[in-house]
Image 1 (cartoon, rainbow, N blue to C red):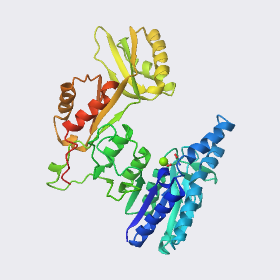
Image 2: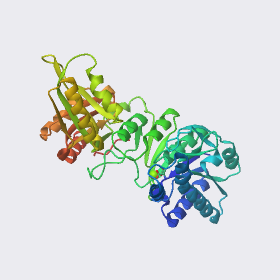
Image 3: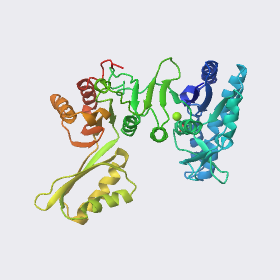
Image 4: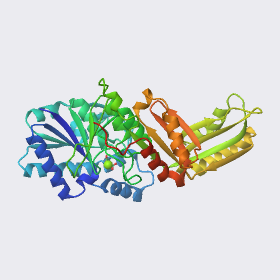
Length: 412
Ligand code: ASP
Ligand code: MG
């Protein structure tokens, strides 16, 4: 018997009708001989509605009460789904996070899971019950309700799968898997049969919104095989797991698994900064003190005892960062500050990069063939990112998708 944790997001349980369909699915899953634990989100739009209610009363609601409020959305779904299962003759039992005892720290609105008590769930499974758990919530050691941050139900599902040593954690959503890139930008994008945790993490942090980053990290840490599938269509979805190093198969593995992109960046440059120790800190210290997150950082080779320094920030922070940088420029006697918020970051991701040379030059050639100018470059072991002008986003993504043969059917 396989033990499956099956998670359904807000759109998958958005109406009573859809909840009935999920109940059918869980029933089938159990009939097929599996142990079944369902994790559900609030019905779509519900969490936003609750947050809006709080905003109408206070701009800074008390964090404890905020969690009491926003955790209620999931409580509605677990009860309705359990009722729908009962109507199908399935013995099901719902649990809030506190009822399971998903113990978290006390950081309201962004709590971290510390421990899960699996006693009640194990006994339910032994009795052949389907367990329905509210995602996104837990309880701290003093009994206060906590929530895990937006999209946190993915993390609940992975954590339960780890605690129960489930065979697979399946995330059902409105897409049928992880794609080589966003099909809205490249219609030839292809669903991947599998991808590694590392690649998925890069894809998620580079802008792919299929899974919450924390959930992928968690799954990698506890080696929980994770599968993304469609709630509405049949299909194998995409399996996220560790690299398969079967002899002879490595050659067939694609070098690049996907193209990620991020439209939310802006870049800032400070020119003619005195090239002295401590200057990077003098520039980035005040930026980080202002709670602005910096992504790529480039410092040029110094010439004439000065240097240039470029970095990117989230586009929402651009104006604020520009103002701070102008103040810094005056303080350190720099020549000039320039910025550009009409840029995007495009990245190629693949563990195959480790064992293949020439990936970067292939990427740069493909972009140059389309006369796309590269403004910044950064690399890690399994990704290469470039900053290009916003107007070339679509062309850049499609060009790279073709150059690395991603549209072709994979051999696996
Ligand atoms: N309902 C929560 C949210 O909308 C948690 C989740 O959906 O994963 O963020
Ligand atoms: Mg969600």
